[in-house]
Length: 242
Ligand SMILES: Nc1ncnc2c1ncn2[C@@H]1O[C@H](COP(=O)(O)OP(=O)(O)OP(=O)(O)O)[C@@H](O)[C@H]1O
Ligand SMILES: [Mg+2]
Image (cartoon, rainbow, N blue to C red; front, top):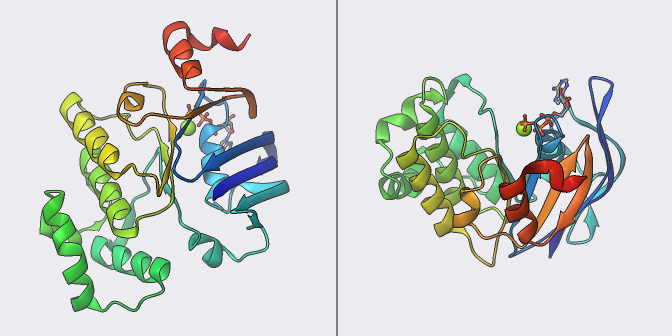
């Protein structure tokens, strides 16, 4: 099983931000996407999540060999891809509980009620040491960076997605919070899922071992290689591209 972007071209606000991107993520393996600021990593993640601003102008995205381009956004969203955003959106007026219940029902095709969903979510809150009161706060409004990451990990535990894109989830955390996030993510890593880690700080890769490295430059995959390529860039910077 795999998630594959084939000859992908993406435009945002009339500007081509990705061109001729070819990547293949096999289920059960892990990947990292590295690249300088502005090289197109987040745009790639948004495009894979069908963000309306990021228009896929050419070619195809395949899940287990099946094209996703003809599906509606709703149908695509059920295809088990999860993106942890670099910048987490705040949604005033939507309670975390209702957000989670809606997403859960949509993903799983269930119809959990207020009471039945409480029974599903409360043990997970306890496991992650998240205060129950958070459920009744507006989504991400006023949450600290650490609390927001924990809520994302809560979603990972709840939804159990197959393909998980982490866009700089290691930024903005203190040293202890980072370790906790990294340990939690490590505990979720299995041969039934795939992490795609976008990072500028390589420490996260000490927790989640990657099988393959993609390096983006100017909206293209400039280099691709085994995990040693990440070590090389960690030590020498992006001059290894030239
Ligand atoms: N919503 C947008 N509107 C206009 N331009 C955008 C938008 N999103 C991305 N771009 C442009 O696309 C290019 C790639 O940006 P992107 O955020 O994908 O880079 P990145 O590799 O994630 O960078 P960083 O490492 O700093 O997060 C940049 O030139 C950026 O200005
Ligand atoms: Mg980015």
